[in-house]
Length: 464
Image (cartoon, rainbow, N blue to C red; front, side, top):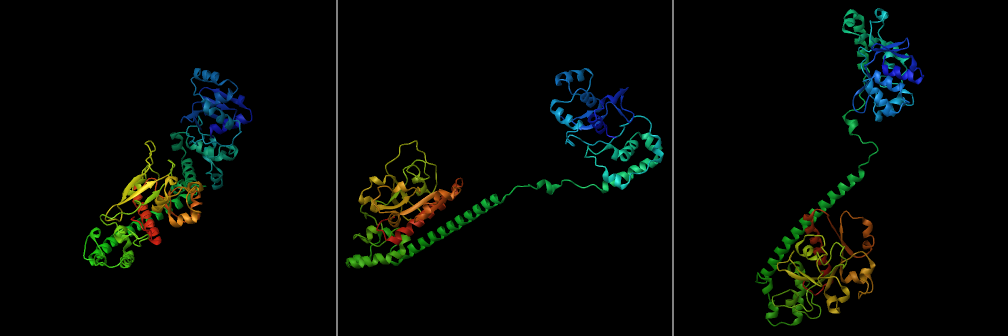
């Protein structure tokens, strides 16, 4: 029998007085006898098994103050029950809990001292029903229901001499072990350990899938931009070759040199419109500007100055006066550093898709613009707030975004709720990665392509 179960049975029926120590053995009434210092099935949280004498002393002194109990146990050179094990052990022994993870079944070898019992010669092998009923992992299993099987296990492990003397016991033990092995079932395996119950990774899968799609779309857009840029260079070279020159900045239309009229120059400008990307302009003159000034020739002057791009004046926005130059000119996004003094005007040169750099201005004070300056405003980076357009010289959003291209710059991981108002406007939304700076150039190319299409559709007479 398991001494821990017997001790629990005696504790639950308040019969601890029947447990007496005789020599190096404990007598449990007239029923059971165990060696005092044998290990029980209860394992301490510190890792060691409690011995029977330590548990008997503990359960008989449960009403003693724990510090006094520790001193008395040490004086008797007994193993002490730790404070962290005290409550759980007492709950089990007194029957308040039926089972605990601290219990570990041990093979009861040498559990009972003395000679083999006289009925050993006539002991029958445990039946299959007995083996099925025996559940060692359930300490609450009644000892009376396990007596036949436990007695067989005790008798088998009594001593090597006993095993040699009683051969039928060895046979019964072998049959018993075979019965147990046949009914073994794995509780956990590799697959069950890897299962995560009540966990749903669909959100992570959706996020990763979305990132892959955006990455693929950005790569396709970049490839398309590279192809378009290559085609533009080819078309430009061929166009100027057809006009007997390889330098677009030294080109003068033959019609002008021949002294033909202004209407002919205008028709030449409209023909030139099909090559807008290679010429970096919209060639339909508005207010009598010649083809030379519209095409950005050497010595040509554009009345009013370079194109203007408006950015928000707030320092906490993604793009402002502090970082617009790096983003629009170099194609690299850097976080805005508001420690330095903010300039009134930032100038930069567009190099992407242009054989010759084109000058631009960046400003953030629309109220300081003159009517002539407003004619040069071609784009605005919006915040998605109504107050950004207060005191603008336009009737409403429809008029603003029909004359000026609106861009909403956001991080790709930002909530879509922040762009709800922007989606109601005629605004281009461009997404940036928070960490992948090599993708910034793709976003800038999107901006320039959209700006080019916007200006060409409105035939704005400005070098861009």
